[in-house]
Image (cartoon, rainbow, N blue to C red):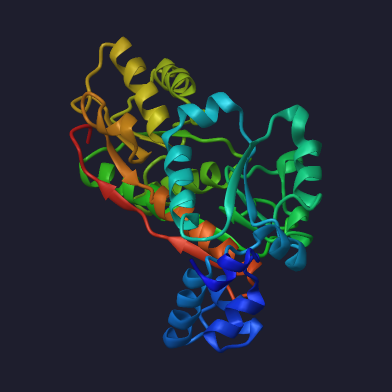
Length: 339
């Protein structure tokens, strides 16, 4: 038993400092994981901590630093949408992995139409040190103004230039959609339709823009457009509307894999085959596409990397470090049997 334990005294930061032969501030830096301490000092302090059986008082540290060591992940979507979309699951996994070796815990807030104000009050009420916002919408679901009072990292840029946000992590959706559409063009498709995503969200807008750019560069028509909300049901409905036009279609770019799989059912209902009649390309590279029949050619979206990058960026912001205001992640085409 240590001398402190034998005396019945609770080990303190000062006792650890005395045992290690360093200042109280140095012990505090080691406990908080500061990189500004030499390995030799870290080893000495950790040895003293072990000898004295010292347990840091994290509650007191939080009060002193006015930190909660809590981070909120805000998803302005319905619970049904979040739990049915593999994108969110992979992104949350990336966030959790990045935070696993830090002192920060994660709370997930799924915002409904009736809880908008409640979410904002929670974020600005001193409950968290920062927030991650994904699936960012314009209008009432915007969190741009929150970032003026709280460190916030956005998954994707805001659509409205007036919504000035300081830090974003985004995927190159325009280039990814161009890759998908150009692959269909290179395959010989000339009447290429798209099922675009919601136009109040950056991925919906950017993927439609990439599709248009690829077609316009080849002098091909860009009039075969229908819209969905990234769900399979709306993908099927949009594909039926495209087919009901009675115009020839030999290729389809869907703005996510779920809508692409929804389109599969509508194509088959019309007695057409994939890819012989209509070649199909999606976007995301999730389990929906990989297990489809035929397996879906798609654009790989690095959602795991996106989540981990967002989390690391937010922690750096909270800790007062210099952070790049915008990070753009690359996409790549994954070739499978649907195209």
